[in-house]
Length: 85
Image (cartoon, rainbow, N blue to C red):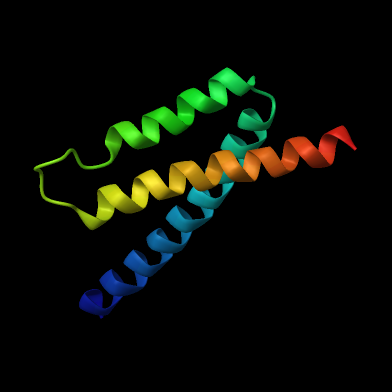
């Protein structure tokens, strides 16, 4: 019975991890929505910073992480617009 509990527990842990990531995304968006344009530009610059450098191998995880950062900043921009209305 013990060997069958491991995948079940891993599934529970993965579900909890997904929930935490969603919560953190929403929190980051809320915090970014309150930041200045310069601070949002800095977040975009950081996304460019983690993108692969010329001459280096493109790694899908790095590319996706940079894209996610940009999307978080863009989503924060939408929240800023909604709040200003």
